[in-house]
Length: 440
Ligand code: SF4
Ligand code: SF4
Image (cartoon, rainbow, N blue to C red; front, side):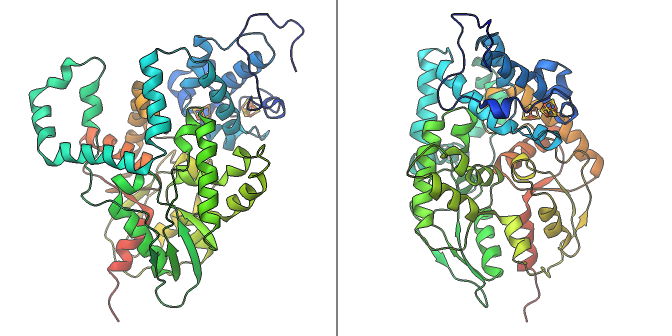
């Protein structure tokens, strides 16, 4: 639907990854999505709403405006939480639209040589290589364990650097000593074997939440699953997709499809919501690939979020008593990307002793959003503050969630507010309850 008055010389969408017109023109501008959008609610601006961002995409598609810095700014500020998809009565696949749009932006973004180099190194040389990422996180661990972090914080030296480096540094999570590694290990099922599953280890989660990954394995094993932690698996590609680097994302997807499909498993289990959402959509990512399109469809059908998998199995009710008041924050990529909302709550409510209290607007983003906490720091913290105000009203002492990005963001939110709150994975609480069961 290109306008006859298309203005010459404008940067427009082009190529096979451009936002599809059939997706774009599903939007009828009704505005039902506005109240679901955290950036619209924070600013009250149409251009920071889903409807406004789609209108800009349409305008570029029709050649009325080009991909200028001003236009890109509105797309950049989108957290990609996909809450608008859930609210939309017309079925606009906003996630696909913004993903395709960011790919077009990435091709044209005017940044300095150093910034481009840093971005390329992070996206192509670090995240896709678990060993390199582990070295980077290992350096951070040494920084904490050696006492250097304490000295740096005490000295105030970071305040001398441009930007808000001191504030960013204060949000570093305390890293555990142990990491989780995908070495091809096979963990046997406890009791009668009910399924053989592969587990996605992921990129960040095994390094910052190693003990929690072990808890995931124990929960699966406790429920009769033989767990294969597939060797050769790589990052799911979600971070790359988020910033429009579809080329690397496709390469990672193909490598994962090859190693996981060779394993002869009933399901590929994912404990990180962002990764699960990405992997369930490998079929769309590889739809134009003659060699992988069909394989990607089969693979995506095998991918299961751990909460939905456990409830479908069905899981064995835990017997250990936990004396916690717990609320639950929906991870956007679980509730909006995968439409999994009831299952984590079913699991939490099954734990004896837990007092479950709903969080108001639990499905509203916490401001984490992939690289958003770094690239849009101020806005990310504004959204986080709104979230923490809602958390305070629950009186909970534990927030349960299902995604490492949310967990780290909420931990920082609790730290900023000085709240005595624990942020835990649902599976971690389930594991704790199983482990407290009286021995028979
Ligand atoms: S995205 Fe959906 S809800 Fe939002 S304006 Fe368009 S049609 Fe309406
Ligand atoms: S993805 Fe989230 S932040 Fe972006 S337009 Fe939709 S609701 Fe708003």
